[in-house]
Amino acid sequence: MSARKSWFPATATIPINPGVYRWFDAQDRVLYVGKAKNLRARLTSYFAKPETLHERTRRMVESATRIDWTLVNTEFEALQLEFTWIKEFHPPFNVQFRDDKSYPYLAISLGEEFPRVFTARTRVKGKTKYFGPYTQAWAIRETIDGLLKVFPIRSCSDSQFSGARATNRACLLADIGKCSAPCISKISADDHRLLVNQFAGFVSGTDTSHLKTLKEKMLQASNDENFEMAARYRDQQGALEAVAAKSAVVLYDSANADVFALELDGYSAAVSMFNVRKGRIRGARGWVVDLELERTAEEVMEYTLHNIYVLEGAEVPKEVIVTVAPADAPLLVELLSSLRGTAVRIRVPERGDKKSLADTAQINAANSLAQFKLKRATDFTARSVALANLQKSLGMTRLPLVIECFDVSHLAGTNIVASKVVFVDGKPKKDLYRRYNIAAASDDTDAMNQVLKRRLALAVQEGDLPDLILVDGAKPQVSAAVAAAKSVGMESLPIVGIAKRLEEIWLPGDSFPVLLPRASEELFLIQHLRDESHRFAIAHQRLKRSASISTQLEEVAGLGQKRARILLKTFGSAKRVKLATEQELGDVPGIGPALAKAIYVTLRKDSI
Image 1 (cartoon, helix red, strand yellow):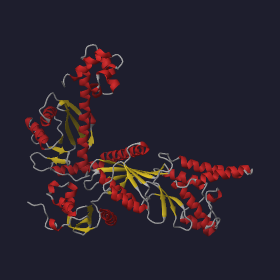
Image 2: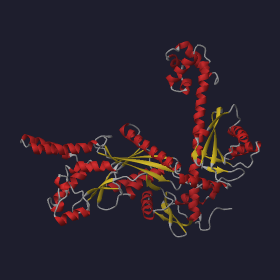
Image 3: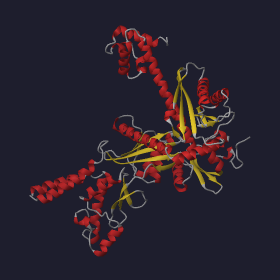
Image 4: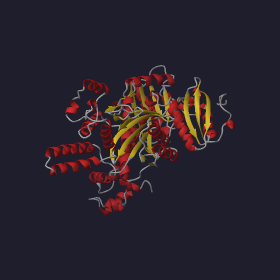
């Protein structure tokens, strides 16, 4: 049966030009906006059989009732139009960005007669200038407090300013020299705006001349024996230096760049961003990215840059440093250059300080994603939803409160091991984890069958059956597990498998897999189980490999346990010992040429 819906346009009617397309639902809401170099090639990929589409793509296609497209002359025009429509329609199936926390900004309301400096949690388009974001609100307060000693601009709210004007009485900040009191006309609007511009220039890192000026004034006042004024200039200079010192110097003095790192696991992603101005990190920010449709790292990076510079309207620096080159990078460079007014460079650093900074941003992104996943895994409501939805999706008669997951690991068919991890109420129960050694197996399915027979035979004796068994693999592994269950009289035990390629869930006897919704709680739980069992199996397999080589070493005449441990400690791992040359082995204290040759021959005799 054809998967083509009646309203799908005929292939021949779809142009092969570059363009932008939109999917609409029955209420004429825009579901998705995309661009294509060849519209026909891109759109016909959506018309395949539903079971071959990714789950989110299939749901979008099922929800849609029509498609339209707009032809453009160039790929660059397609990029611009795509971004414009995403900004206008906020399509639910496009990449969605969520800040992983609410970051504060230092803001200056340049649109007012007497601009004020304040802390803001959100950026609002208009004549307000934002600096940051900062990681902590107290860092902004310290920055403002230090700079007001030198640039005493207005920092009060509109209501406080109006009240002071009405009573012609300045506040305490004016008395202690941290405000020039424009509310009672102690300073003109033009002079106050000059202070504001100096304040903004120093915060942005573009103007450090004031430090030099203060030093010159301090020396001049000292020469004139005006020591009180010299002390005031000294204190102002110290205040500016204290503010500057709070920003770490990471690049050369003239470097203006934004650094983006991406950590992607296929279902969610985290982005870390550093703002570097005048060689110093002036702000840091992070996002958790919802991937409604399947995206490559290059596509996510492209949409990240679009989100920050086009949708949010952030200042575009001279250089954008990324850990992975964005999709359509040349077009994006052209777009960002047009926004900035001068040339912009996007690059993936390979060495030096910029590479180190990008690596630091990558660590932050990885940590953000791990924290996001940990928070999700420990959320009681999320776990409850996951178990309920999993029961429904798998057609189970009761909640899978106890789930056991099995994985097999080996090295080219040797050192075969398996793992069992147990989740109770959606959480790992590590005291119930188990490791299995397998003497021999013809393949992974045979190994899985052996492990399940051993586990279920014990369950028959002790009566501790799980509600659901999950195996790492597709139909063959599921069939092997089912055969093991039948051999011990447990035909009714729920058993499913998870295949890595599309995270498909395979049920016994089914010709097609179950595709759980992307980014759903139930899929997250299944992935967590699979990843934990894989981690546990790999750790055991590596330990067994190391122990195997240690045993071989102890068989070498004249070596003994002590020298074997010295070898392992010297090379750092059993693998490195096995790869070492005779010369390298002989250089280890206490080994010598003759013993090195014996070790070399022993460790390689199985592979000769």
